[in-house]
Length: 461
Image (tube, helix red, strand yellow):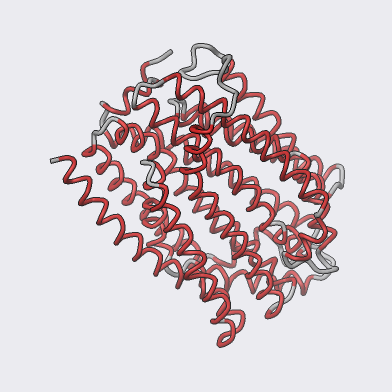
């Protein structure tokens, strides 16, 4: 057991060094994770066609619901583990691991069964049409079949990262992404399985990754590991996990609602191709969002440990440095997307692709995606700040603040804008709703963090 893996260094090592040590592997892992969607969409768009991308975009809300329950346990459990380790309570951290595993098994099974039974009505509710339902159904039947594996793998990987093993967590995701990409090429292009091949590749890759994570937690030299007496659900632990994890849970549920509204509006003002363009735009946005989330995952154990240890000066340092780094990331995303939107869109659906059923459909989808990228990322440089602030509140156990920020951006700002702006500017109004909501949400986040700063300064002095 090396010293660099000892969680005690979170309270003594240089804060910037810790942020780099923990966030770089997390960023690389999150980038790799985001490649799941991007690789699938690129392969599907070029091998099957633009309507397949639209069908895949229809699955976003259902994927968000599944992710909501996964993050409820994964984010809550990993944050609690970091806090417990900061309090030198190793047995308590082990109990959280056991409870998180059981919760993921239960929730993952419920979503799998309910999703498969009611799949077609759900997809039609989410914006599917006769042109896209077959693609969405073929993909989600398989993804839902492996939902328990996905939940347990992602939840345990988060806990492995926050318990002092960020590099191992990164390697886990790399393993899954590499296997997924290789199997995508084999199943889609060699076997001709189309969109179902992409889904099968994803489930197989995550199964192998889960085996890797389990091997880590079976090692008794790990700081927390499988042992007797940790799997019985305890009300106190479950409540703590749900309390902290409620923020990302609500965020994902709200995202589900927003995507449904988006799909409905896009179908009305642009048709199936506009929904596919949103799928392309959302994949690009989420790629950069995942980088920032990787940064916040690296921030989380540092902030959580030092908050638990009452070293509030270090808590403030890691927050400030995370905000600066996040702003650099989102500014870079803004520049790239404004300068090269067409090149990005054409990665997903080449307009001279002979395999496309209708080249004109592909061309139109690219045009929609170019407009979507430019408008959606118009104020992206400030988005990183609000993301860091929301995740910071989650890291230090301030669940109510994190939940408030998560819900206001989606429900109070974005939903009304989606309903109102298209009435004046049509499809452009739909795209405009995102940057307007992002800007307002950032202002609110800054106000809340300034108040928290004052509290931390009083506790430090």
